[in-house]
Length: 538
Image (cartoon, rainbow, N blue to C red; front, side):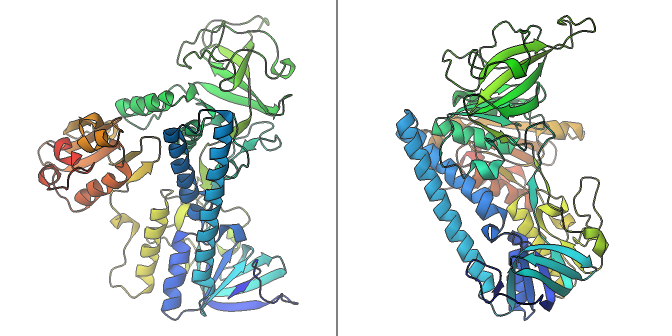
């Protein structure tokens, strides 16, 4: 059943009070799976979700699945040449958005009815906050609903982290990933603030659609947590798609541009020359394409030149950081100022646990220093009979981790002699869906070296894999780290077509403590990308 849904049942005239066995705040992967399991066991469950647009959680509505739908549509547009002209680009983008909306709407509806149609589950649409250790008030469109529950599970996910940049909240054309995936019109130019994996997925996707993409990175190192050879290969792939990078770039202010776009004031460290006007006096849309930084010498890394002045964000020189006497300062540390104009800006600076407005203090639930709900290895919070699942507890931000969190919690509720804990979780893999997907599990070489391990590095160019050649996708590399004396697989990094499938084979081998020789000698079907593991671990 439901309260306050688009297909609503009767509107309550007075504030109702519900007493239930379990309350789940948030309709994410872990919470919805737990709700179904509790219901099947005969427990009464209330699921509170703040928005009817979020039934099913982040993944199916604004995360994994809609972004992958758009990525696949963008790849198809590139393969078909639909990204070659403004008209075909717009048509391809419009069709992609339409398909994305169809998929998310279908999945949202299925997820809603999978819970709401069960007699033991009540879905309430409204924002919840604690009023006591076992009591919550849910603000619905029809008024507040009070819920008292024996056990409460916080599953509110994470929300985009927005940096404190003047104008970022008030300037039209500035988006988080949620808004950028729901545009009606494709931006011809896109600036992405942040070069983490979320930003890079969007850079790759929009480049495939034909958008001119510029990525601003606040420091000089690209993907600093990855091995240098892997990071270089990923960057080369993105640059081959037309993505431009500007390093050591800090966005100081954002404002509407005169042409209806967005204007960013950007400070770039390491520039030894620049012009002298202030950003707020620079006419929007003037200057060369952003990558042609005329008169500026970069002492670190910026971008390579482009010959088309309509490509990418338009960059105008502004000023260098002045010295005490007001004259431009050319000695280090130099800081050149530029005005960057673009059609849209994506803020991709990470996500933070979504705890705002929950009034956790009323229940005695504490937060960590990083504003995540504090939990132990059983995902219990600092309050009795309250757990936290998914992104909100500060763990890895993956849907499959939220699902595994459900297993941790359920193992405590089903009478198990030895509950499954977070410490039992092994070798969490990850995949980033670039034009050539990048997947990894375990330690990379940088981490193995820092840990003082004795290891050997295995490498294989993807061009040596027959299936990759057949698929016309020979770009990338495979790399594995193996402990020298034991043959134990320490980790793997796969920048390869279908890496998101193959990485799971490596994870399984690691989970089973199988040595590298197991994958070296395994009989695979042919031709497949998976059979490359024979050669990688040889």
